[in-house]
Length: 162
Image (cartoon, rainbow, N blue to C red; front, side, top):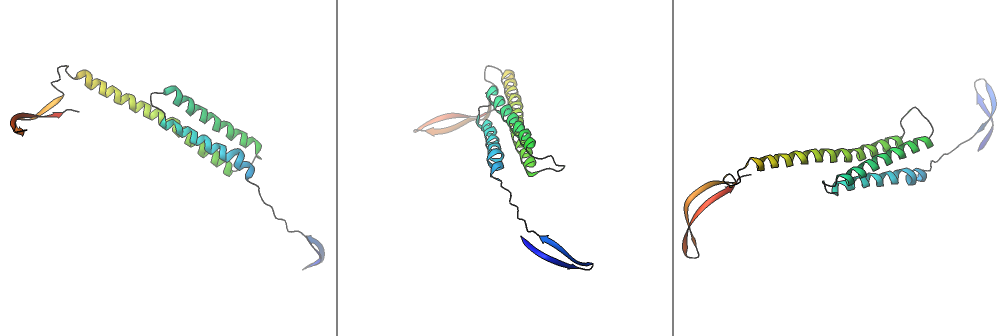
């Protein structure tokens, strides 16, 4: 701190104290308490991508658990910080984490719907196909002859119907 006895102004000389303050914000607390755990929870929600689509209870439980955990973390973080009228970087981070986790839950819903539609379409196709197998193949070429181990063989070329 520098003490200057007098400063000269237009109106005269005045005594004053000059202070030079340097502030430094410590971010380790929020890094350990918020950023790292929320990142791990988002990564945990992505584990649902590798769980079998038929394991509905596991995927739904994991999705809801991670959404609720991120929501709880966001409200706890907001309660510890001062109330201000603007969005803080920590708020934006928590919203982004919530979007990623909620997106993983919505992805499962979309995959589940598409999977059921595909199964229904396959089942309809199987139900409409005669059991004698006559519509499983299209005949492309008949009467072709081919040599096999020195013998002539009649060949019929079939195409599997998909």
